Length: 164
Length: 353
Image (cartoon, rainbow over all chains, first blue to last red; front, side, top):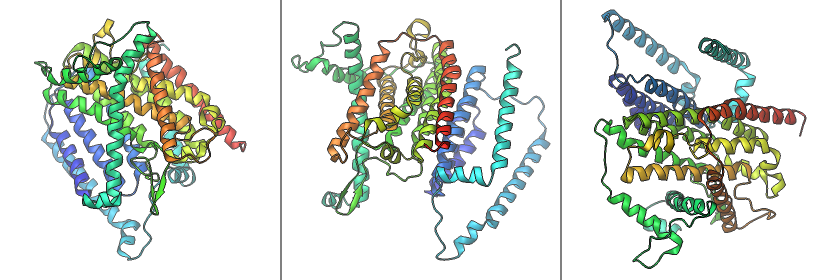
């Protein structure tokens, strides 16, 4: 199961990068999002999987595809002046990110608990638990994120609608 | 049941799962195709016509036009499968499936009857057992996926009418999803759970304890949003004969068109099942404390088919909206109403009701 979902995610991501047609690339990204949702389910976190599908595939990607179709530019445009240095910088950044992510995972307490035999199996995540965690442990972050999104929304409306 | 399972070299659990999947999906597909007939006969009834009544099996058996279904199916199968010259072939093929599959699998979490115990094992009458952790987030997630079918069908046909229809449909679906989700969140809040089984249990068997009585505003918002989600009249902006020909399915013919049509009706079935589950007590039978399994299934089916009929009824009763009116209604009426509903119930709960 893990291999299946991991393959869907990876192939989707690679397909998105290689595909020249922007719409098909967007669909590949949707496939990758589904793979990630499947991985969330395997990690006993169906809530994250559902939210991933609702937010990313159901809303964000639809809007992105919508805009692409509206602009009617189906083919990727050639860069005006290709800088090979950009490619190397991006590769280096991705490598740094990957190393950081792997380090974080290896240092996580969940992984250590796996080594102890007979440790309690973690309970599946529920919406109630997500709510408690958000409003009890991460209240400040939650409110700040909410405010930020509100500001972004007001900014977008103010930018596009000059005379309300 | 166990014997049958061992005959097929399956564990009883897997066998039961397969049985459920087959029953649920074939039932929805059957109901969806029957509903194309209900739609035509119903519209004829409302408009004082007769409707399709000529098709007959072997030229004899007419069964009030039901043979029309068979005739349509056969016709669709044998029609030439045309693909426009400049269409994106792969996506043109994929789009009907992307429309049909989400419409069908959205039903998976909805319990269509009371669970029963047989041989010490509890059998749940829903494809995904309760406690799967997805609960009612699942139909919302899958409902969001339905946009892709319409959007891709529209774009891949390479036809300006199609893409206009697809754009309108996508914009409407995304806008109405917010109001709908907030209405569902209110139910999560008052129930204290988000599993459909919990929502049904919390409503009980007395009709005045159902969510429709407590949250009439939420019901109105949810039901209206369902019209936009399923792309039904008065909100069917994916199509529009007088403006954009047949909209997103202009270029579709034969079985591919049939799949798109079936997707719409399967979506309608799932939507009515959701309305019945969320606001009308699901499989609960009014005034019956402990209904038998068969009775509960019958009660659920009755509620579901009633709402499916209301969808047809409203389609042929109300005139169409204009596109800007639809957007206005979605953002400036449905969303605030939904929020007011949420805040009101949050306030009531904080007062200890």
